[in-house]
Image 1 (cartoon, rainbow, N blue to C red):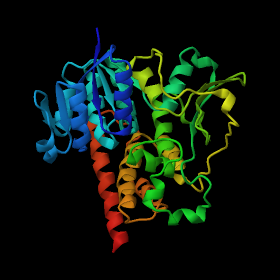
Image 2: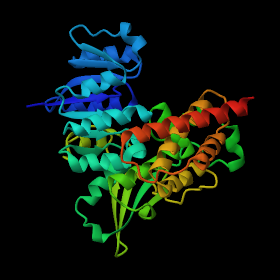
Image 3: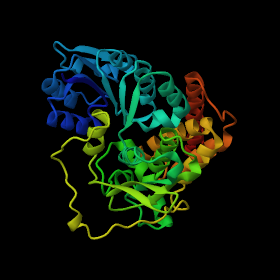
Length: 383
């Protein structure tokens, strides 16, 4: 019997790749729900192909453009949560930004399988998500290639054998730039990633290296590991996605082509490896595999993420919210690329308390405060 699957963020890069995997394994899955922010043109094509029972468009004013016929149409975040409550067994959460948090919480409370591509769920509420996984019978499989790699490497390694885990970063489009040149880069340059084809937000986060900072915070909660045991290495080839260093000095390494369909397939198949016809890694064609430490002086966002992780739950919420606001301001041409971490740091400095957060209401209070504070600083800078 085919597993019923709901894809949140179906028109984004992860959502589209997920549907490619499902098409390749169509005897294993039935798409029962699709949700997107506002790309109704692509959503309509997906509706025609997969014929889901439920469809949700986040931007309610786009409702009239959806060709839903016999499909039940929902709108907004409440519509997404209602769709999660329907009869799907697996939920792929590929929504961008903080909008993905509530569907993650809803999915876990319903004892469903969550294939999580939304970083913000763990960055904003890692402690809460961890406790929900302990309380309910739900399961979480990470979709990020780095976390999927570590997840698989750790399956057969006892905690006492682990010294460190390492997640890799491509270095983004500006890894060879001098620090002085970064304040001149344009949004279109930052959104042109050299290796991965991703959505706008994650691509910009990769350029600032905030993406890797968010992944460090994710790793802390996913693997219940101390921040000082999480390492980051720049690896431009994007072939090694994760490493586990053992206490005897040996390494377990996960290698694969830079194709998100590999970790997506692993996640929606609940940890089972299935044949894929997509990009195949040919070791004999590799010229080199290079690794070096990230330059946090040139890319301070990564250091800010580590600082927030040490500061506590509230600081992680602030980091994420301020990053969303500052990143949008850069894309809109209002601030320079190098201003993004500047405004985040100033917002973190202004935040007080909340080293431990155990309720979702407090998460949203801090999130909204951080957004307002960053927006106020931005307005002052425009004046």
